[in-house]
Length: 196
Image (cartoon, rainbow, N blue to C red; front, side, top):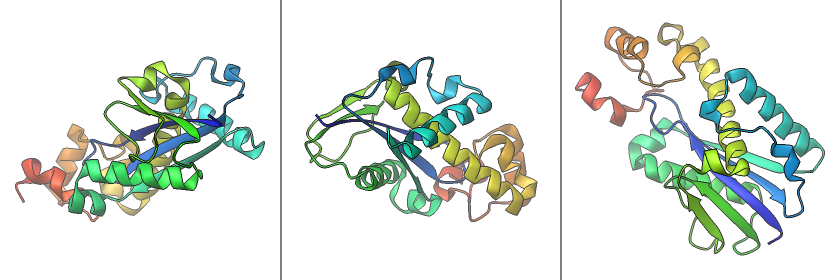
């Protein structure tokens, strides 16, 4: 294998905003010490995630690694479902990284899979905790998505997207009940909440 790739998603469950799919590619001879101390994005503070994201960006600048994050919109999620949206994101990041069907070993988190033409793929339960390259993919996906939601907070200040990032917190649910939904909300996720 010429490269190793890790893939994870962030934002499967929120009521608003896109889902993000992150992929990180390193050469087979990559210095694994780079990953020392890394954890799944959910186990890191926002500051720690930003630190690792900056390391990934520096690694990309030095051509030591590469990564991509695909944001798949709430409109696609509503039209085709979250599983389709994640599959679409996986296709996009693999294409963006120039990964061919058989030249890379791909590790994916949880229940996600790459398209069938990627022969060397392995889905690992809790892979974001066990496999460092998946951890970095989860961090990249989470940071890019969170930054997007902070930007949306300026457009929709009454929803506090910068706080909860679109997840179904009490604060967010109360804002939806008070102000209704926005174009950013996943209507298919709101059915139980708003009965609309």
